[in-house]
Amino acid sequence: QPFLYIRKDIADFLGNPPEFAAFPLWLANYNHPPTPPVPKPWTGYTLWQYSEQGHLAGVPGNCDLDYLNGPPTLLDSFVI
Image 1: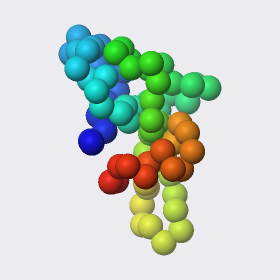
Image 2: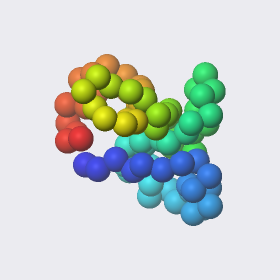
Image 3: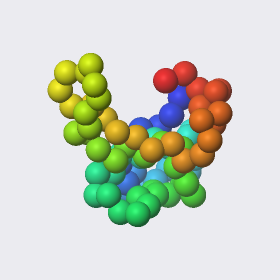
Image 4: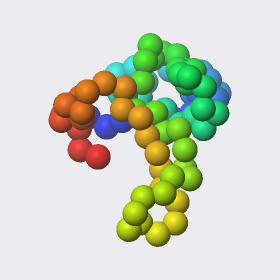
C-alpha cells in the first residue's frame, strides 16, 4: 500500500477528500511545532518529514529528516 505524501495546505486546497484516509499519511511540515497539524481526513500521521536540510555521514549534500509515529515494526508492511 502506498503512502500519501502531502502538506496540509495542499490537502486543504484539494478539499480533503475522504478517500485519502485509505492511505497512510506521510506529512511534509517544516515548521517544527511539537506536533504537526494533521490535515483532514486523517486523525494522525505515519511519517512526518520535518526537514530537508539534514546531514548524514557519507551522504553528500542535504537529506530529508523524518519522524516515524510508532514503533519501527510499523513500517514492516511498507516498502520505502
